[in-house]
Image (cartoon, rainbow, N blue to C red; front, side, top):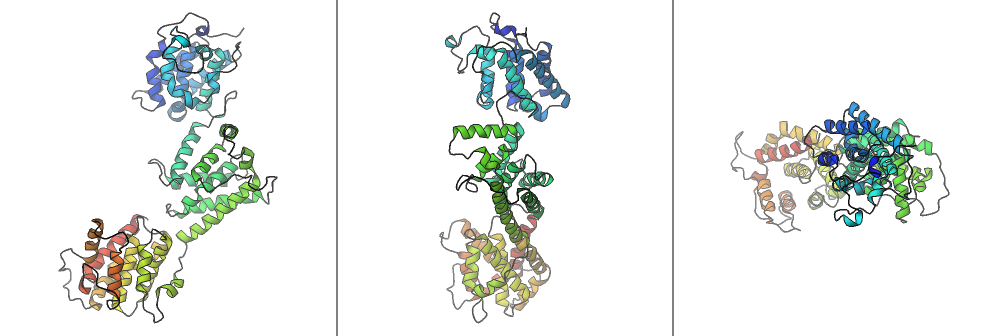
Length: 523
């Protein structure tokens, strides 16, 4: 006959020994334990393996359940092995014990219960029935908790948390490592990466896994993840071209295996993607493991609006979203790292006589929040035209200031496709051209001297803007640059600055230096 834990049959104990350890287990569960966690785990495992079907087996088993995520992630191999040995011993001894219960607590969602273990464990053997115990709030009876089959079930749950996929007979559960991955991935696509998360590293890892095995079990989940993240990757947040290259390589590798896949799904029966990328990323992580897929099946039963699991795994669906992500990543890679063409802007930013349409030029940079690429292109066009050497020195000054402004007006540096040329042009200005520019404009300044006492135009405007001196729809920088270029066409803005202040070598050097610092900070 199979041994049964004495706790299920014997008289109640008012002070079970586990009460001396449950706070430590709870601290390890929440990573707030300040002591030697491995020592606590080993102590619990040794007590369980010494009597895996004894009257206190329930306590040591549930203690290991509380510590399982920590054990699987942080414990030494010998400590994890000791815990697994004890849990397997308990499962073997108790899983076939006679039982009249229809359900057990271990069959429910562990995440919903585990935070209550610290309070419930000491109550299990305090001698009070559920209806007489004012502190007992669980919907299951104490008898169900102490049932040998429940203890064996929780032993298997702990085993699965420590070594995912190594045991059966438990409810489907997303592996702990995948739960962390889902959380990290959501923070990326929300554009608020967690402090410990490197988006480039994370997305590269998913892409490399797909390149390594484009026909494997993980294919569907990885394609869904890469599709969810492709907008973020191509947004300019990632400055390393190799990340986009790897993502492109992964999707190119997976498409031949999907071929010209067809399916029996009707219109609207495939999952909706692209609208909620965080939810999509979460689903993708669930598709990576049998436990995660089981959890998703449960979701689908509970939430009828979700697509069935088979729709997410459909090759035709995967081919469609893989192509969509691939097109988006290729276009983004070219925009971020390719050669940015600005020749077409001649028709937009030059008037028929060849003079600048200065208002259009400054407007593009001013409203970069509406069209960031237009602002980048306008600044790059100005820098290239400056480098080409327009005859009018006033125009050269304005073009240089606009190029610098296009860099400093944004919260982030421009992408490589833009800052590559900007860096070369502005670097040359810093080393060779600042003094020449001042001489061309007739500035009579002694080398190294400056009569403006650090009150240069851009500094003054920035200080006034910081004080909200200007209205939301006013553009102090554009208004001043417009007037600087064409004083006969535009009214003199307040406060007024003379040409000698704008062309001061120190002022020009400050503007160029600030732009270069931003560019170099992104490299």
